[in-house]
Image 1: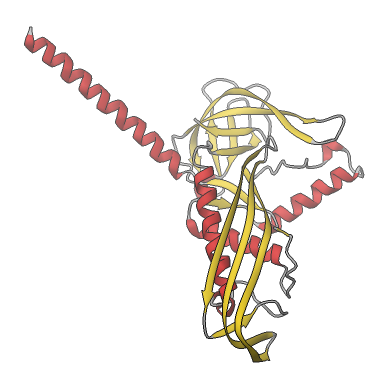
Image 2 (image 1 turned 45 degrees about the vertical axis):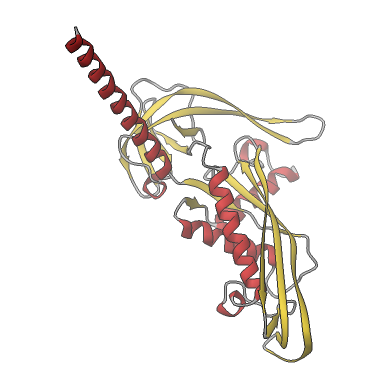
Length: 308
């Protein structure tokens, strides 16, 4: 009797360990899938003006930091600009709805990151006497820089704001100080990165990347159908650069007509309907081929491919 109980206990234990190992493997692979994000130009609500637009400068720096983190696939800003221009054309009424992109529907990006710069300043104490060259002012003083931004993470399918968070950075420096409130400031340059404002900006960007990674941790990876070859075979966006590999299984959701508030004209998102599953059979750098075990009816380019 005891031997039978022991064997059943051992069998149950092994089964539990096997299931735990499989769950860990699925979770681990889910973590390797890089969500596709796009960074829009930041809105500058500070009085700071320079040779380089602060909104574009922040967006470029955040884009680079997200790419360097290795956790995301970042949509090129040139491509984003073209999509936004097409959306503006659609909203102007000069193009038919069916022929234009809809606001919030960036087909290649799962998440749109928008930001607002609320504070960007440097307070100095000490001698104000100094010299100026190349668009910079130099003086012997102590500088304290502060920067703050608000970032919003938006689901490009529904238009829902998934998170809105504030990030800020501070830095101080003594001795020689650089005045960054003049023309000629080069974002990303070694000169600017050593200034208090440059250090405050870097700290802010680092916090933004950490916040984005944390807030998107529980959001399932999504890609899009880019082509339907027949009822069983599709091509999906992303490919190897997003971590997709052969054997991966995804759920297909058909995206319905965009829902618009009749009173305000606000885009409310779109209805989605589960259609079935597909298994990846071949992976290229920017796309992958997938097949379904049963016919998928009513699917089209632009429909959602979501990790299970």
